[in-house]
Amino acid sequence: MMFRPLILRLSAVFVLAAAMLPGRGLDLTFRGQFNAWLIGNIESALISQAGFQYIPELTLNREWGGGLTLDAVFSLDAGTTGEHRPDEKAAVTGDLEPYRLWTRLAGNRFEVRVGLQKINFGSATLFRPLMWFDHIDPRDPLKRTRGVKGLLFRYYFPGNANIWFWGLLGSRVTKGWETLPTPGGKIELGGRLQLPLPSGEAAFTYHHRHADLSGTLEAPQAMPLGEHRFALDCKLDVAVGLWFELAAIQRDTNLPLLRHQRMWTVGTDYTFAWGNGLHVLAEYSQTAWADRLFGSGEHTRILGLMMNYPIGLLDQVSGVYYWNPGQHNHYLWVNWQRTSDHWQFHFTLFLNPEAETRNPARDPAAGFSGNGFRVMVVFNH
Image (cartoon, rainbow, N blue to C red):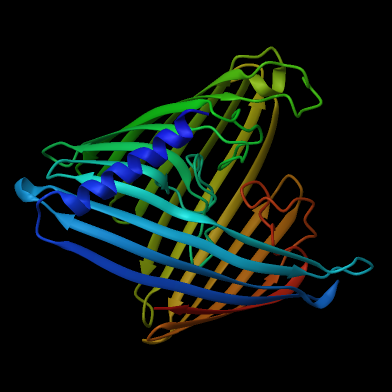
């Protein structure tokens, strides 16, 4: 628990340094994003969900001599969501919490960032084995996700190679694909090495944490167990875009289906010279759980297709399709977007199976179960 106030103190030290030390002046920028939405479900109710969200953001920036820059970001997530389901009382929830709260010191070849921040990486888009620290949904036009508390260091070598190191503060809130939380106050450590290739880049990533089994039926009294994550990803830009992500998780346990987990994704994309340009992206992914790294066990497969076509300067049509061959389930979203100055308007139709879980990291239909529509209005200032 001692690391939570430490992170906040480090953030405060950086901000005070930016304000007090000699430099070229302190630049302040204020902006924000407001969005409101309605979701209707044909099977349950005309309007099954309604809500709004406002994210104000204050940015501080100060340049020093010698190529050093210190900046900070403070933003809040304020919103309310109401849900209505047949034969149930309407539920209304509200949130007001920090969205981003970090400070960064950057030089010509390095940067160090501390606080509540977004950390994400990898080559895949629809199914991301490297979605370790975020919940970014490819169907979300705003790409919103919770942040993680920690410290991130990046160094950029000559020739475009770079290396990352991070330390995160454990939380009971799961991240990415996690089903087991990290015990509160435990530190997570990891790093990533990215190397340039003639037509792209490749990277190796490692992360270590402790996973808490106390809330599970398999081992409700178990001590936190060590978890090691290894990943390799590569992206090439040749005649078409090509990429893959491979990730393996090893846990220090004798429970067969928790000991090893592996996930891999391959993908490609291409923009066809039809009209204004039709962009097509396809990915295939497989996840397996077993008592050995390459052993047989339970597994799932999923195939995804995403298309995007600009109708003009203001309008754009996109679609996302998922197919789960094991369960014979099909998922479809079609979205129209109009952008005008500070405004965005979205109208989405979706045709999906009824979902059993609302976690977008594990359920393709999360938030869009059944057949229905979504209307969203976004204002940026």
